[in-house]
Image (cartoon, rainbow, N blue to C red):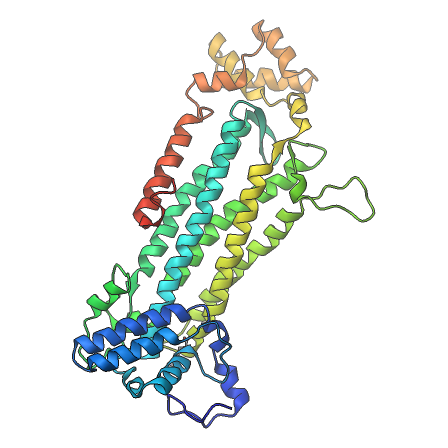
Length: 444
Ligand code: ARG
């Protein structure tokens, strides 16, 4: 049993209730960031003349010695554990809390960790986008059907289809960048809620903690967890794109269509049906990604109706938020690998069985014969109803075969031309990532 020292005036609670309110198990996730805050705080206390150079040295050494991976039990939270540990090593430990509270400390650590999570999320999306880009280049000219209402619609290429995800994802990265920016405002120096009477240079400490700026209003700084909502919103938006891709893969890989082949590394088998090749990893990813939505909902619900100023409810956000990021990143990694491995299926040979070019024919009749589009449309609709194919109708009405759907789209300047999409994706990716963090300048 540790000696009965409590940093705070507690000690009257039975163990089971103090365990009930403890965050020590999940404080592990922010422990290193808390230590960073404390180191900078101690330096500031010395600069302002509250503690001596010697105390500063002893305090920093004790903080450095704190082991975040050690099994910490019996503390209300990591803040208490550190103060206890430091105070055992040096008498100066009793100065540690001058001018700060756990409330500004935890809010600062959460924002610092959140920034890292956002960067990691952006990084995982960056890799996925690059996979989409390179697979799209490999399949740039391979015809592929599109669907509306999940009925055959118009022809395109597999490359065009894949780039739709690259472009949407790169647009959504802006949301993550905003989540980063709003997390980059530092609560340090706000104390419990209304600041303190101790002279501290918030801006200096916040800069040393690698924050862009200070969250000026101390009540805002200690109360708000909106940076978490914004972050969960932005990864939820990406999640919705991922879920759509996953759903497409289920449909396109169905043997009735066989437009894509589930890579064997991603396929599950059946214990009884020898022919099965189930899209197993994507099924898990579909289920896992839903946690992002649930956690986002939980965060909104938790923050609803909380008054200004810290409340312990806020602590309960911590473990689930990190879980959302972890789940998100793992799923993105699985999907990236799927995109790298996926190949086109044999069903691609049969796509012209469907009247994918019906609209192309109506357009060709309208443009080449000077017939209003609606009339040309009616001609094609009538012919199809009579059981004729688009190809037969083309010969019958136009006297020629329909031109190649891909070339005619490209000639018409339609976005079937992939180069501008690729350029946009690469340019934006590079810009966003360079602006967000120097950490990736060398990566793309
Ligand atoms: N453990 C808390 C958290 O993770 C910080 C402590 C704030 N407690 C308090 N009584 N003000 O948010």
